[in-house]
Structures are given as structure tokens and as C-alpha cells.
Amino acid sequence: MRCLLYALLFLVVGSNLLAQTDTTENLRLFPSDAMNYLHQINMNPNFWRDSTDTLRSDLLRLINHSDEPYDTVASRLSAFDLQDIQILNETVLVRDTTGIRWLNDSTFIIDSMGWNTDLMIKRDLEITYPVNFSPLAISESMLDENGKLDSSLFIPDTIVKMVIDTAALDTLGVSMFQYRSGKILPSLDLSEIRRSARLTDDSLNLIYTDTLSYLVAQEDSPFYRVSGRRQLDSLQLAVETLLAYNSVRDSSVVIFTDMYGRETPLWINSESYEIQRFWVKNFKNDSITLWMGNPQGNEISLLLEDDIAINRLSAEQLGHLPLKLIEPERILKEMEVIESDPEFWEYGLSSALVFNQTYYSNWSKGGGNSLSTLLDVNGNATFHNTKAETKWINTARLKYGNVITGDHGLRKNNDIFEISSQLNKKQWDKVDLSASVYMLNQIAKGYKYFPDDSSAVVSKFLNPASITVGLGVEFKPFKHTTFNLAPLSYKNTFVLDTAQIDQTNHGIESNKRSRQELGTQILVMNKLTPMEDLTITNKIRLFSNYLNNPQNIDVDWEFLLDKKISWFFTIRLNLHLIYDDDIKFTIYDEDQQPILNPDGTEKKGPRTQFKEFIGVSLLFKL
Image (tube, rainbow, N blue to C red; front, top):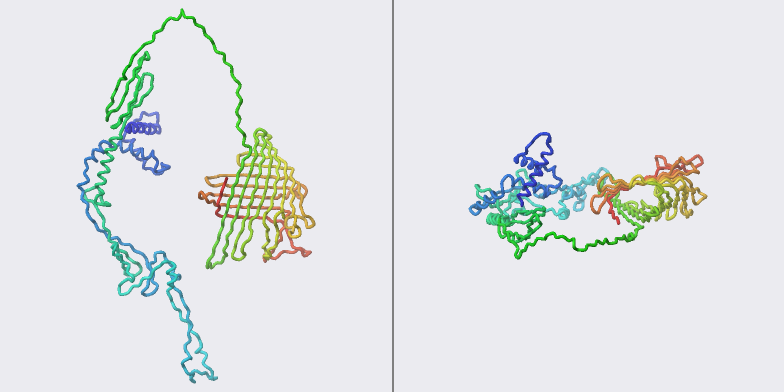
């Protein structure tokens, strides 16, 4: 059977080779050419997607079998006697060099990690005076011309002491060694593994010498180094076992076909006792039963079934018999179509927990430690009625983040809570009538730290908040791209607690609590997957006020990039840009001082708001 498979594979590969040549010529592929071509294909690592593919191993077996039959290899292995090969002992010396670092004239450490000596040696400064007056009597030679002690005797001197920091060495797990009288203390020699150690001539490296013993086979044998004296005996036993196993399992299939093309397979091998039943028929469709078996290797037995009686039917005239044909009445019965219960609601939940951390220790260029986190939770519930061609899309999002610094402690650096509800009615192929409600809010209090770090509260829950109601159409040209145009939109931005929150910071006049706007809203959402494990999400919301400067368009654009690096972790880049000409910011000069108007008030103007966050996140989806 294996030979038959190899022959079929050889014919398929040969036909592919001929298909690559000019079919107008009468070419012939020789077996040697086919073997060379298959060998080149098998040895080319760039050709295979997986080097362990089973097809590659099958081609290698086909090449080896074509080069030399298995029977020849088995005969040569059976004649080879491994018991006559002698096993000898061989001793070799292996040397290894490692660097050392001297701490003083006689003390060193093994410098395998390239340690800095500043970690191991401390420099202590000791102040001393030229004269110690405690045991001496003051003489006239110590007095100056005014009768006072000579001031030069009080000039201190500084002595630098170099001390080995043994505590640092213990912490690093580094041992100290001394070199005295040509010996290393404590000794690095290990007699149990026959290892010795000595210093090089320049005393910069340490040389280890290991004495190793190996078992090698005699030189005229095909083997070199063996793991034991009985390894060749085990090899001999393994070869004999596989030769006997292959002799038993090697099999072929014989296909018996009758005159109608029906096939009966019969496997032939050394230990097959299966019996197959085969029907032998003639042109009159008479049949007898043969039992075919394989009693032992390369033998087929045929056995005729007992008690066989052959009877032929003959045609007779039936004219004297009454014959009445009755055609049955056939009526189709109405069937009710079984409809499955529709699933109107679809739910989804995704969350990402992003971390970003910075740590400084003895950093000469300055800097501060910080740890920031960002939790981004998205939920959606969609009601889809196919028959009514309506869709109700509800989404909610909570985005909250904090940052902890060594100088300022815990601060909020991100807070968004938004709810969206949209009802679509299909009107044309890719265009729906749409009605939407969108609310933007925050959860916790927000503070203004720039420029004087006053920690003034500038926002809290529902202060400010905005609600946008729109009517229009939605166009979806692609699966993950939608354009929502609402030419009739109403936007209300309000601050409830004007006693604590300055509403003018959010584009509301000082004598009001809300700002009403009527205009057009455009929402564009897009999701791309340019490569595997990389997702890019864009959401742009534009609003133009009909009643006040319609040419000044409010922009709210958020960009989200997720690159999956493992099953758990994802690198997330989040960019958020907002521009609203109704929101005024104080304008500062180069010294971070507010610029004043002629009437003494601070000069304010619209500014582009931008926020960026990047970090490693844990991303979960349901």
C-alpha cells in the first residue's frame, strides 16, 4: 500500500512539473529529475509555511524510497552487527574565562554582571587638625604677635577613606575573594567535579579548568560519542524491533471489481484474518458468493459459500389473467411554514483598563513619579425588527481616569459619561430616516489647576451637561461606516449649580443657566482593521448653530487605536479634540500671566481642546 501511495504522489508531482513547462513540446520527466526537483523543494525553507508539515515529511520519505528501496535498507541493517564495536574512554580539558573586578590590592569579586564599583565602595570623609591641644601645654611658639593662638593651627585637613560596602555586596549576592601567596581564598577548586581555578597573568580574568571524561566508539565505526557502554546494544535492539514491526504492519490492498463496477477491497499483510464477502455475477444477473481471506503473508484464500442453489425465472404469458390497473388518488396537503422565534435584541459590552506608569530614582535630569489609570466601559443594546425595517440603537459609555504624582497626589484626568439613543426606519437601500437623542455629562468633580494651582471646582455631575435631539437621515455605505445628517437639531447646554460652578467657562452667559442652540448636526463613525489585531475607531461630531455664527462649527473628534499584543493585553492610543467657539479661555502671555483688556478684565477667546492618552490596557468583550 505504501508503494502504491508513493507511486501516485510521484505521478502527481511529475504532472505538476510538466504543467510548468511548455506544453507545446513533447517533454519527458525522468525519475532522477523528479528526485532532484523534490529535493530542492524539500530543502527550501522559504517554500514551506510550517517546517513540520506532514506533506514535507511525506515528500522526504518518497525521495528516500525512490533513491533506495526499503528492502535493501532493511537487508543492510540486518547484516550490521553493533556488538563488535568497542567503547573507549576519552578525557578532555575544558577551559572557561570570566572577568573579575579588584576592590583593593588583595580583594576581588567575580564580575559576571559588570557591576559598577560605586555600588560596592564607599568614600568616607574624615576631618582632622594638624595639632591636638588636649594633651599638650600651650607654649609661646604657638602664639602670634598679639598673644593669641596661631590661626593656622586650626585649619582642618580632609582624609578620604575607601571602605568596601559589604552590605551592598550581600544584597547583590556577590562574594569577595582574596589573593594571598599565589592562592585564592576561599578556594574555587571543586574536587568533586574535577574543576580548578587560577588567575591569568594580567590578573584581570579567572580561568576555570574542568576535566571531563567521555565514552567514544572506535575510530573505524560510524559513531563517535556515546552516553553509555550499552547504548549500542539498545540501538541494535531498537533496529531489530522496528524491522520486525514493519515486516508485520506492511500491507497492500487488492480491489476486486464485478461486472457492474462495484468494488470490494481486501487488505493483504502478514497477520490479517479478515474475510470479505464477494458476489460473482454473470450477464443474466445470476450470482454466487465467494469468501476471500488472507490467512498469512502474501496469500489469498477463496471459499465458495455452502448450500448454493441457482434458479432462473422465465417469462410467461399472462393473457388469460384479468388485469385491472388502479391509479391511486394523490392530493397535496397544505403545510404550515414553521417560523423560528425572532431575536429582536442584541447586547454587547466591552471594557478597557489602561495603565501608564513612570518612575524616577536619582535621575540627574529631573522628573517626577506618576501612575495613571483609565477605565473605558462601553455598552450597547440594539432592537432590530426585520419585518418592520426598524432599528433602535442604544449605547452608553463611561470613561474615567486618575493620575497620581509625587508632587500633587491623586487627581482626576479624564471623566466622560455619555448616553445615546437612535431610532432608524429604512427608507431606501442604504438610507434610513433617523431620530436621535444624545447626552454628554461627567461623574465626579473637576478642578482647574492651571496656572496658580488653586484647585477651583469647574465641573461636577450635570454641571455642565448637554442634550442634543436631532431629526434627519443616516447613510451607511459600508459595514462599519455611517454618516448621520440631522438638519433639524436642538442642543441645550446647562449648568444647574451656578453658585459653585462658573457657567461662563462653558459658553453660557453670566446671567443664564443654559445655552439654547438650533442647527445642523453631522455624526460620522468609522471602524477600520488595516491588519490583524489592529483596530482604528473614529467618531466625529459636528454642530452648526443657525442662530449664531453658523460658519463657526463645533467639532468633537475622538480617535481610538487598539493593537493587541497578547491574549490579555492591548496597547491603546486615545486622542480627543474639541473646539467650541462659545467656550472661552483666558489668554496668557509668555510669563503665564493673563492678558488684560483695556477695561481691566481678562482677555478670553476660543481655544482647541486636545487630550491624548496611551498605555497598556486589559481589554474584555462580551
